[in-house]
Image 1 (cartoon, one colour):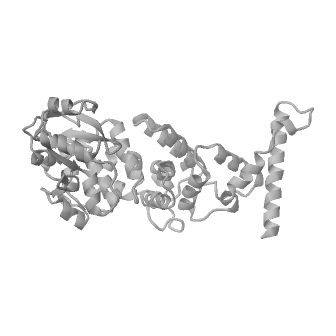
Image 2 (cartoon, rainbow, N blue to C red; image 1 turned 180 degrees about the horizontal axis):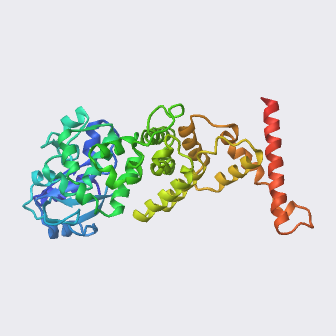
Image 3 (cartoon, rainbow, N blue to C red; image 1 turned 45 degrees about the vertical axis):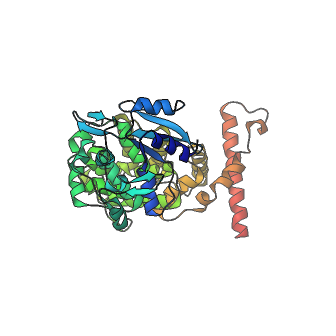
Length: 413
């Protein structure tokens, strides 16, 4: 159905129709807006369902319908107001009858830039809480003290700051800090959802910096908080402590790739430095092994996506030696390890480049080396070779291939 027909059917039934949230915000930001979310005011659910019998109801605590509009399934919600009756995001009493106004619905939202509505068909913008001005000034600002009633809004504000390059106002920081106790009890999947979106932002470090300023990093991502104050040799890390280095690396990875896998790997590559004994600093001998223990514990506390865990563990284990190996046999082993990992070559290179600021030839051209080495097959080995000898022969042949490619490329250079 066309949007015009959807709107006309509701208007003829006495309802008002709005586009709300991110689509309106992005229109005012001057960036490409994506999925539209609709809000209807002044109509009962039964009447709506009768008007659109093909709509799919998906909401649980309050009704949300999926309606095919202009070729896309769009969310349509009823204006609602909420009252805090318990802890966490489930601790709300929700009202959504036809008497709930647009003003009441927008007031319950998190930040002013998300409280904008465009009324259809007139396309009139309703900006009741100063969202357009906050967009112009680049500010994340809570609508009211009710912000902290859903503790994950604190992460959402930090993530919006990272996504849009905005700053958070002081009063909102205070409200974020007030979320601390309830946030510690939130389901891990809600925190991971915000982490994923933050990692996909242009500057992921801003998310973690905002959480730390609000006093929330220690309870949401203690593995990263532990890096703060962990000194490093200034000759190699003039940027400062292990936390500052990690923030620098994750932002550099973000500049090179949109891959959330690579960005997460960059984020966790030095986790082991958070457990370095104070007397060892500024050195962090063995932080790779300790880092594997930290990410294992993180996964126990908050089950990480399996591909994140695998990529993170691989980079933790290999990031120090990967660009520094000199022995050809070890280079061959590393190249084949990278090829077997769940990181692509560009993803792995992005992390190593961000961490070390340079790449050796064997990493720059790793795919070409591996492609040639993988052509070696046990079917080609001498007929009398069996068992372990076949593997030894394959590795020897792969090493020969690597050496031959390096020699040829050196002669061409």
